[in-house]
Length: 625
Image (tube, rainbow, N blue to C red; front, side, top):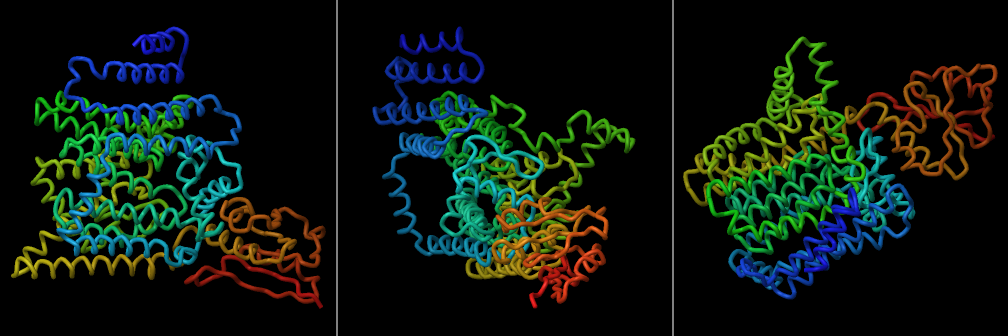
């Protein structure tokens, strides 16, 4: 007790900022340990094992957080050790409160009661993994600039030049938590430092999200809803897109599904282990894309619902809520300390695109003549229409609403059913999460931006599945086998349409990504396949350059590409040397022809992406006599 008091006074009188916060947390932990046998805590299930593992986890998390603070702005060579220690702390915290024999018994009971359902879940996961990992270098064929930056961040880890796993890295116009790219680097080490290897990690994360959707649907509703939701999400084109990208957006789909799964399970069961899992999952979700920030107020809202419906809920579960908070602390504290040292990084890209920024809102009001409420309502209206009436913007642009006609109709039916059962914990959680993420995305520029909606894909799949199961039961004459048949037919139609659209219509079409991205990808693959030491003159300015897309640096690392500006005098243009190639965009074809006119023999090649009707780049290769 004296130690706890001394640490608290030290934090108050001597320390400041993040160090003071750490001091208070250590003092709180020391006090909790000293007071474990005090009156009023008789109902708390303290055990020596619980205490020791919890204090170990908190101590390691605090030490890693202190390391993050001390090394801010400097190079630290042993981040791998710190990352391993933090992962050990997270696992120790879960083990402190979760009884392994309960998990094993639950798995065995599930298999003994319904082996067919277990096999179905495994098959759905395998299907999801297959669709997210097959032909990764072909679907999509192009690699965007932001995707190249993501893959370069992972390559930096492989080359031993990583930033802190508890910091942020540049990605496009924003900065995002860097931990995701450590996982990506691990799979690049296993499957290759190339385009396909950089996409494997996202495929696994996306498949895990599908499995979580199955478990969530079964826990909230029924095995039928679970199976239908998992199949819908496994073949959902938007989720397929992000599951096959090296960027970190797909992490939010897993974070949302897993957090809702464990939080609602904890509230329903009241077991300490479930609360520990819920807290750790909520903390880990913050390392993904930034829409996961909304999970924190969402969990508070779900807890408030429990307290409103049951006046004594908070008192009875105060210890369990502290376990949840401890899980968040162990998982999120190192990154939280980084954000405390650099607060503007917390919201990052979302802070840049928020319409609630006074300068943007004032400019929009002045240009449109609308009031602030009218501007906000217009943005929200566009976002809520993304399912049926408006084509989403962003990276994934399907040139149609987010849902196909059949899925859109079933989604509408599902919304009606969920609203009708809003008093249920599961329906309230589902609709609250869906509404919160839609509003959050609607309060940003250029709605509806699908990249900011990736977190709701599990919720979309569940709502569609609810409508599908209910519609099938109404259409079937036999309430058992007839309903199962109708569910299978409707789900198969949605799955087939999703696979056909992504793999055969969208992912392999010339409209995929911007024309500059297509040209950069063609240039990158061409450079990669050249012999070592080859030089390329690139005629593309002012539209693009060798370095305008990070995909070129990632795919063709170490190759020599020189930009030739537009204002070069034709009389002093460099002569082609042995091994030198000229690559030009179509609009600079005439200049390229003038450059190679002195060459005795030139081979001309037009390179274009799959399905394109015209060349992206034109290559002039001197042929040796």
